[in-house]
Length: 453
Image: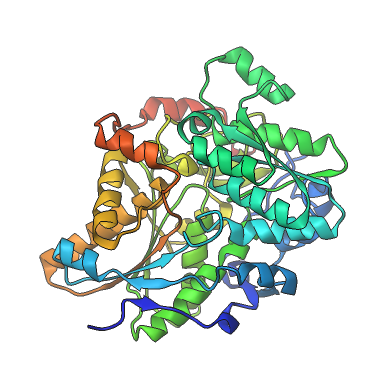
């Protein structure tokens, strides 16, 4: 039998990040200042972000060098393996050739350290003492806590309350790495207290947690804010995934017909797909690219392309993105990392340009797909990654019905070993599907900023 595992030597770790902004046929609409409604200047972002990250956020350079110190840390787990999922193929009875890039081998168990290490490095170089952030499922908070410990910075994490309760081991990992972790909304910030006054029993959202973390960073000169998804520089740092995958598919003597990733804010999806889309934009390959989101938080499939705030309390700049409205609060599904009201501007723009297809999956189908994968391949996927697996299984069924053999590549963005209570709830029949009511989405969208009118 042909190999099922494809590894690259350490020296193949990418030396540069790929910036898809350089190859867009239409430029990305700029972020706007919420007060003046004019395009943001670098100085507008300076209270929150390190200077070098601001430059990357606004850059249109195609290749941006990865600092040696960042590469040295990434080399502890990169290059990550690419697998041919032959046992899954057999279990599904499909002629499709299924490959997965496995990001769960990182210290935090997901793709998130790819950008956490870079962001903390640039903050350290600027003399920052403390980092604040939000986290949904805890993958990002875990990764930032790990990176802060490596560089000697303090880390303060606001974790969406429903995940804070559902995922105690993620919280424990953050605390093990020296971070402080608070359930959001909390009484530590003006934003949190206002939200609790409206709904004392509220389960929180990523938009709420962002408001709290941003507020703390903006009020303290020695503190900066780091974001785990959505923004351009985060997508940039994740492109090491797709660059490696390209080289590994060559080792497999194959090329993907379809590239799939789960999508909440868009970071792991961008990481696997942007290098392939970049070649597609330059006419060097043909590939379908599919972003998969939860039906309970259908940003791409039911949201509106508009300027909106990235947080609930309206402390952030306005971003042109697919949004469900900044006041949207999704139900407490167990894929906490996908519970965000907006999609990254670059991902949203590529959907607008017809380069990306969007698909939504219900929670029960996602967990059933994850269980099918785990029993075939022996890896327990993160609940977020289960959405990508569900789409892979759908595409494999299409191949089975047609008899056509297509190569499907997806990003297994993290393992689910710290998410076992979610699987226990699924196996016990305690999970349910949610279809977010269209009228409630319409209510949230009714509050979009006036710049859209």
